[in-house]
Length: 344
Ligand code: DAH
Image 1 (cartoon, protein in one colour):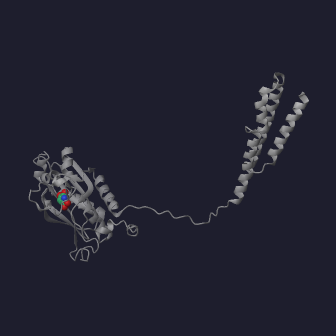
Image 2 (tube, rainbow, N blue to C red; image 1 turned 60 degrees about the horizontal axis):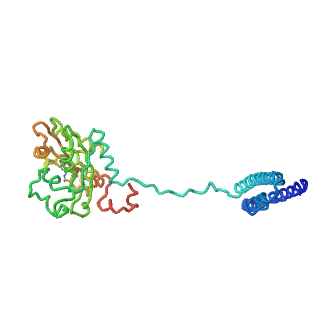
Image 3 (cartoon, helix red, strand yellow; image 1 turned 45 degrees about the vertical axis):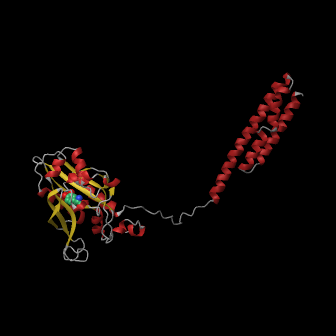
């Protein structure tokens, strides 16, 4: 083959390819054309593979020519691809119209459960006062739940009636958060002020009782702590929670782990003290139990009651939430009916 024959032939191969590329109108077609012109079965590649079979003196010229054709085709494809992308993009921009005046799809907002809101609020008050947060296990022993809290062996609260026993009585579900007092006093040396939230369990269920509910235990141990400290702290707490006009009344009571013990009543959150259905006409509502930590409890954990004194209190969170929001059936708090929960 003469040099001029060769260059004519390669020239027409290149021109045919470039014309084909120029006629392409979309990206799918572009890809097919690319494979046809540069793929393994293309004329160009077939010729390149055949180079080795040519007489040695023809190989350099043919090789160089084929490379030039390949570079020209590659450049034409690149140029065409860019043009097609640009064309297709402007077509999309013209055709795909967004109606920005359409209303958005509403996203349902989650919210805090009333029990969680009240618990958070209560914890915040005591954390601000410098109380530290402690937690204890929900599965307890008689030792922690009762014995070290100075419950006599025959105390009615140990009845199967109230307590869920596990493992043939070797363990139980804690009936109150007071055993956290014991854990904390064994873990830390006084002075000590602790707030302990948690789930508690009682074999009891009606409109105001749930077998699982929440309590917060609080206590403060230092030198010369008196009932006055307890009153002051609870007053501050109640005023923060229910407002400054709420009145407080301490009634003598009994708990094995405090001496003296009291129950705290507050003026009815609904009628303010005049008497209504919520307070059963008395004007007062019982809100929590409290007292001065019994010396027997101190002795059980190795704290010297001659040197240290302290107060303790225990609050039911569901009760606080029900009074706060005027909910009259505790079960509403656990049914997870979103229409009910949305109100709070
Ligand atoms: N543990 C008691 C209960 O569940 C509540 C209680 C009363 C806790 C008096 C205290 C307290 O710390 O001093 O009924």
